[in-house]
Image (tube, rainbow, N blue to C red; front, side):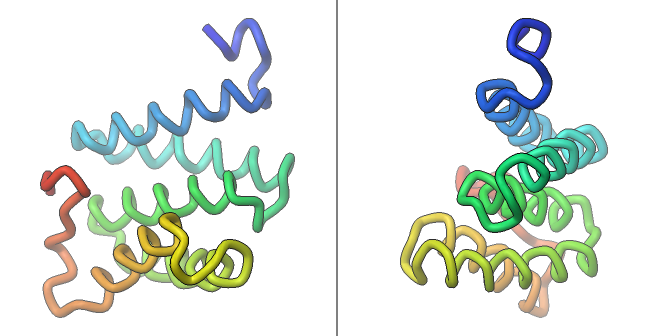
Length: 122
């Protein structure tokens, strides 16, 4: 509804689509979650820039989705890039930086395929 009313690039539309990507991911619908998160990420990079906090937030979500979907190489690259930006732009102790560090650390562990979301779901 917000996309039709406000437009595809409106901040509220992008926020709603970001939440949709999270819901799809939590339901295990990795392909749809990835597609949605990538679209939001690309729009936010274009509109806000690559290091805006909202852009970093969707990139963290996308890295988590890729991890859960078993795309570890792509997730590792994205999470490392995003973590560097989070530390630089936000703060090493900012909640988004810590969330990104969790994804990055998960990808560095020997049991890479065992990532669990904050609610304990795989």
